[in-house]
Image 1 (cartoon, one colour):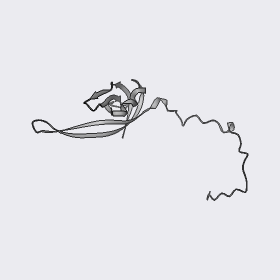
Image 2 (cartoon, one colour):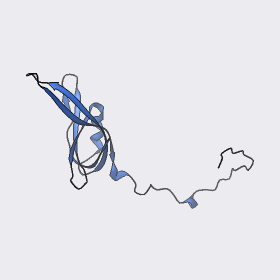
Image 3 (cartoon, helix red, strand yellow):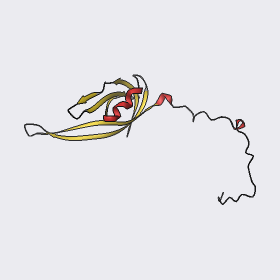
Image 4 (cartoon, one colour):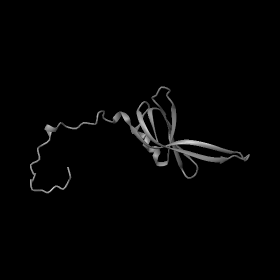
Length: 123
């Protein structure tokens, strides 16, 4: 799954527990008729993926939905969901219209062609 929009907020990396669990959050605002503010968590080594991004950048984030169950001290079962990021792309850096390919006249003609080379392709 993917979430696409502009970065609204990037949090600091937080560390929890004695085992050093790391988490970093980013909020992305979708660009649609009714914009949504989506909180995405990056955990462990994925926290560092956010280092090269800033507020206002258009991004596409690859996400997984995560759910967990917790039983409170009173014995009630509670359920929690999270959106966990695993990839982030800067959409502003992508070239529009297929990229910059030089015109055909800038390529040197092939000079090592051999008419006797066998080609078994059916087309």
